[in-house]
Image 1 (cartoon, rainbow, N blue to C red):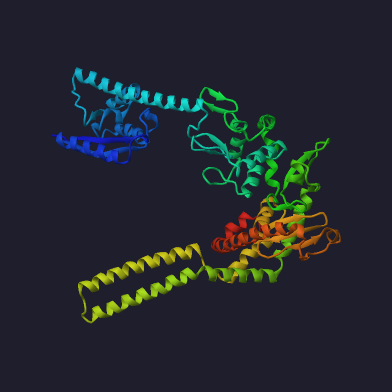
Image 2: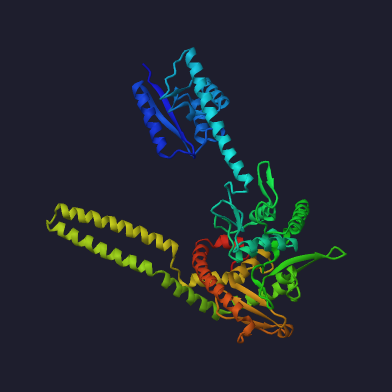
Length: 539
């Protein structure tokens, strides 16, 4: 006689059940199969999935699809409500299984195959659906009571708010000023990308702890909670929560968002500003951000303008032409990368950093030598006829240590590759072959070498990633074609800003050195890819 085959379907929802309930369902189904001579050939399990609709249960859908292969005769469930709580879903998917010659069996509900079984099955499915609908109604009723009192109903807490013990919204004094600043920036003409970059540099993060992006800013700028409006389903309560943004500012921003949505190409050139987040105003030490304008003859002009001057006029720093300041920065970088002595100094820095980073590798190698020495001693003892259970146990233990140390050494070498000076110099020399007229190459040069640039009325100060202190370029000397000269002692008014920049310098210096080590390895392994990427020709 042919063996009857079945699969087990088990599920637990995220409410009121735990992972352990799956094991209980499987146990009951296996017992039922054993009692009735059914061979279980597989299981389909959905974890933390509701049965309100079967369409969202991935393994359930896979089971229905696999039934067409006609490899099993039954679907075993602990109870029918594990299959579906909606009668229409249940009827639909049972019909689909029936066409493939498969029936659904309950391991704990005795349902006969006759007419009375059909009635009983319908009653059980109806009860399951009733329970699901009743539970949903209770949840909605409880959340409606919360909404009438303007209490938090779950979900993501918007940036700028915290939830108190009574589940009411309160303004977060640490993050709410950034929300207001975002609205003011957009109202003054900044793009969402610029706002995201600005807030990221301030250290603001979303509720998941990751950096802000355009989608985060878009959600923020359209969230009516910021004007104090509480909303849940059909319940809308003006002034139900503390407001962060004035209504007139909020509605001006909504109008501008709508206008910009209808002309999406307006801000496509934002990425052309290669000094974004690196160019500072020398008067107030805030970012200088890219902006553009169109003259009457339809000519587009691009500038960098002090954010503080643009936002509230508190700074009187004048805007500077984009091409003018960017060309100056690129030219100073080119002077740096053609300085052979500097490249030698940077190579020494990287080599010193490698030696410092490889202290872990040194310790691992020492441990490996000791383990190998111990293994060698035991093998010599075995050759002399000394072999006991303790000897074998110790040898097995040392072999495991050897394998583990070798794995750790391999991992350490991958994470901290040791490079020769020639490879490191090659990484720097490749910048000399770049076409500095190409936008992507100009951006690469700025990202690799420039920490920050401070623009004063009479001079420009350059902070490079690899050098302490600033290089100063006098605007008066610039007109005469002067080169860089060493920095002078900073003014008292800029000491605090210099301290801030020195912290950033230290962090970016480490990042640059790590990048050199990794990229040198990659470039050495595949120079052809490098040449094609930067549109250069080999020497």
